[in-house]
Structures are given as C-alpha cells and as structure tokens.
Length: 273
Image 1 (tube, rainbow, N blue to C red):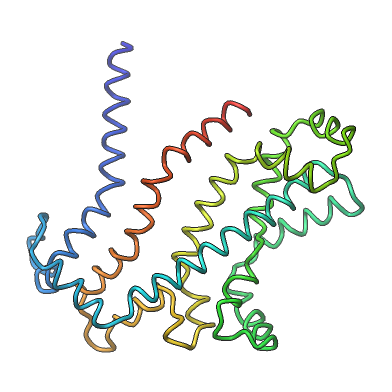
Image 2: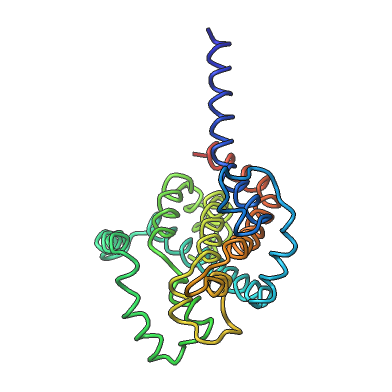
C-alpha cells in the first residue's frame, strides 16, 4: 500500500513538473519558428531553425542590451532598498512597542487592499512635481518599501527572532540598529531570500509604471522596449516571442545560480520555525 502511494506521489509530481515546464518549452519552440509556422495547424511541437534570425531582428528593432542594463539597474536598486526598509520596519513591528503600533499596522494592511492602478495618477503628479518624470528615481524611490514585504518580515520575525536574544543584546549595550543588523538580520535571511527573489522578479517584469513614467528611449526598461515590437496593424509574433524569451532568460539563469542557496535558506527557516 505504501509503495502504491509513493508511485502515485511521484507520478503526480512528474505530471505537475511537465505542466509547469511546458509553457516555457512552448515559448522556446515558438521562438525558433516563423510567424506563419506559429499559426500553422497542426501546431509544430519541435524546434525550428529560425531562432538566430528572430534574435537578429529583435536586436535590429530595439536597443536590447541598453534596455537590459536599465532593467538590471532598476531591479537591483529596488530589491536592495526594499529588503533594507521592509526588514527594518517588519522587525520594528514584530519586536518593539510604540504608540499607535496596532492602528498603524492595520492601516498598512489596508493599503494592500487597494489596487495599484488607483495610485498611478497621484504618483505621476507627485513625480512631475519633483521633476522626476523620465528618470530612474521615479521607478526606484516610490517603491523602496511595500506593505507586503513589511507584513511578511513582521510575521517571520515575530516567531523566529527570540526575545531573550534581543534582551541579551540590550544588556550588552546594543543600540536598536545593532540589534537589527547583528542579531535579527542573520535570522531573517530565509525570509529575505524569498522577498528578494519576489521583488527582483516583480521589478524585472514591471511594465505599466515604467511605460507611464519613462519618455526617453535610452532609459526604457526591457518590458517597455519589447512592447514597441508590437505593430499597429500587423505583429510579427515570432519576433515578439523571441524578445519575451530573451527577457525571461536572465531570470532563469539567475535562479539556477541562486537556487541551491535559496532552497537551503528556506529549509533553514522551516527548521527554525
């Protein structure tokens, strides 16, 4: 009976893996085909021979490497700032008492209920008032802290950071920042790994806000630059899909490099909790 359960479990995992991987496989297949082949019936499920030509046409139509560097800069800065400010605020909410703490946290959670699109116009007006329209500052600074990250770190720190350890630090004369930096931050590493990966992916794939705020083609991020591949009347889908593949490849390569450390951090956090 146990053997049959194991077989069913592994069969389910394999089916889930195939379902998860197939969209990416299909993206790669379509990137190697021409637009006419993409529309052909029955569909072509194996790789074609048009990949290099599609890549060449993407490079000819947009400044791919410039947009790549812009996106890398924005995503990296956003991730670093969010990790710092969210962990600092989350640790404070979890382990310190101050006037209005409960209501401030409720207000913070309430901001998560509002659709992000509602803030686009007010945010643009503020950025215009600062003279930041068309600059990377408008992409990085307004989002350098977010409600979900603070909530996530607060929940993790509340269970994982021992009060006794903080009390020992206070007895040794640690300031608030030293308690955060030397005691809490190493313990929060698994939570920060998850938040960092989620934030980087979100910043990398962000489209709407950069589309609104950027007006200089040399500062376009990848998603905005790739959107220009869509024609007004006719769209070359093989080129668009190839651009999407090139945009997602850095995320996959990054994950392959950090996956071992990421998984070990998550496992360590699970053991601690």
